[in-house]
Length: 490
Image 1: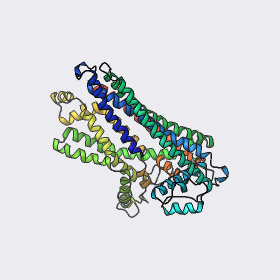
Image 2: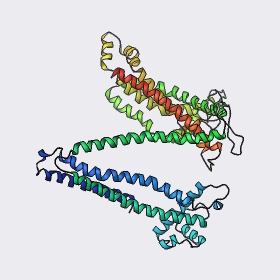
Image 3: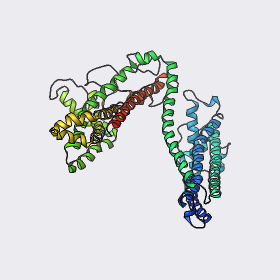
Image 4: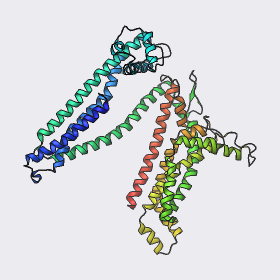
């Protein structure tokens, strides 16, 4: 039974439970809903939720736990001498899962029988040929240990899936039966349902928080492994970024941090004035028709993928800047030798950030009470004086929060920098030179064949944790300012 069918059956049971729960409650009251403690629908909701929610919870937990149990069991079947040099147990397990999926796919296509797929004594070469003929992906030569592990993987997965389906359906039926038996006219169904909904809301909030905690812990543990191999003093206080997977690396974050902040500042110098002026015009000067047209068009920029901005920087903005500031350019200054430069990335990133600054600032300016405008105009101030001396000072804390949120977005940008700023980590104040950022180096260090036992790979987690702390600090500061503003003017 496919997972989709299992979910449909659970949903059908919940719908059926709703109607039988509602009918039983009305029957216990002699058909008069006025004798019920709660509305009839609450009794139906109680049966439906008691049937559906525990079963879904068990399903989610089972789907998370089963792969870990299967992997830990199958891993022990792989002997150490079958792991070739340059490989590791994790890579072997990836191939085991791939072979297991290949066997499933071949059986589904009829290229193999179930008996052939489970036969431990089958000819490995012949089986490999059949899998390839069935267009199943194999990234390395199939060996006997990998085949045996893949067959065990299939058997455990199949048994676990059947056990999961039976357990989930039994729990759904038991939940429905339990709620059905409790249903009568004096049962406080509304209280139970509302408490259940409150628990679901609390669970949703907890998942968001626990996800953040999980992200931090996953990076923290790998960062600790990195600092056991590499000096933290060199990482935080060194001056050179020169990874070398053969040893002798210099891994300092400072050149990367400088490039990140430099490009982000240029982006904010572009985005903040344009976005703020656009917000002032749309909220204070534009007519209703103009605002209805201009605001959605401006916010379209926020929906453009960053890779498209990167292509725009690579094909349009970069060459335009070279034609202006490069050798033989219009200005004849020869400052810019390549389209990959800090200025290119900063300008395009600033264009990307305009809708963030504009939209947030527009909402904040509109939140300033109309009474403050009326009071200023009533005292004889002009419209522009009211904007400068009343509205902007009142909205300033919120605008600062919007700018800080845009700054955190700029610091975390990757694709524009990869395509427009280059890959050189250095200290330089020249905006016409190529430079790189923290996010770009994270991608670079984790791209290709990576060995997670080397500092050159683990440094990506240290960079990620540092970047996370920086952006988290900016976001918390921005939210604090915005919250303070809202308490003051709402």
